[in-house]
Length: 161
Image 1: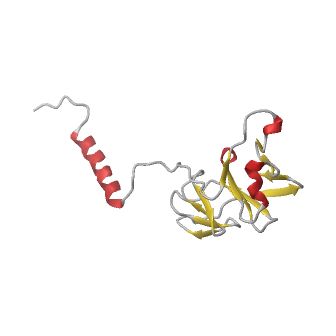
Image 2: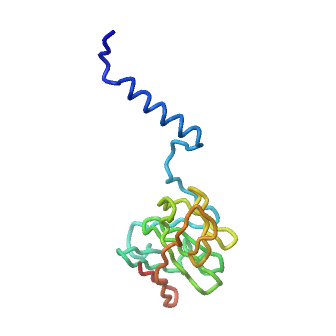
Image 3: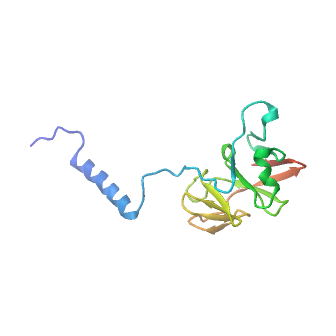
C-alpha cells in the first residue's frame, strides 16, 4: 500500500512520543509569561505629557517620582513594584533603603511573574525565591538577581542599570 501523505509514520511517532514524555513528566504546554504581581504595584511608564510621568525609563536609567500616588508605596518598608517596561524590581527594604534588581529570573528568564511576601521576591513561573539582597533563598534558580545602582535625591529615585 502506497502512502501519499507527507506526514510519515516516523513523524507521527516522534510527535506522539514527545507529547507522552511531557505528560509523564508533568510538563504542560504553556508559556512562562503570565502576570502575577500580587501584593505589589505593577507600573508602566505612562504616556502623555511630563506632568503625568511617575516613572521615566531612558535606556539604562530609570527615574521614579515617589510623590506620585501610583508609586507612593515605595515610601514604606516592604513597598515594592515591578517596572515591567524596564524589567526591574524595586523594593523599600527597611523604610529608607531602596534596592533594585533585574526582574529577569535567573532560572528560566521569566520577567513578569513576581510577588513579594515576607520580605521575599517569588518568581511564580517556577517558584524561585530571592531575598531583598537579590540572593537565591529557594530554587530552582541557582544564581542571584543582578542588582542595579540606586540613588535617592529627595523624592526622586534614580536607578542605573
